[in-house]
Length: 128
Image (cartoon, rainbow, N blue to C red; front, side, top):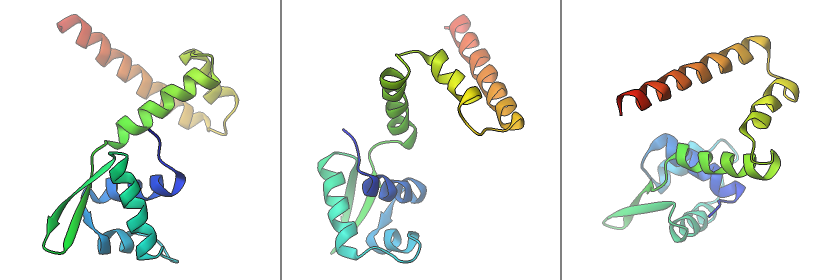
């Protein structure tokens, strides 16, 4: 299941806060802040989609995410690779060097990150 842009924006605030009451969520938005009813409607939809849950404290609800940010975006990246890059991770990686505005330094950082991840995975296979 997918979130709308407005729901994703709200989830970003909730992921950052980890748990929050309505007032905390409203305060986390820049001005102009959305109406309380708008945020309440978004939360209701996100609860129905099983992205958010809450604990009740009297008349108040403390909301918290049920889905980790990394898991949500990982799923979307995998769909992107499948649909736009012919299910080819090498085409996806190549895209960063040919079709983005990444600087040489940013590309070097990306390379280091990939190499570190590669080494960690290789070590995991050896020891498991």
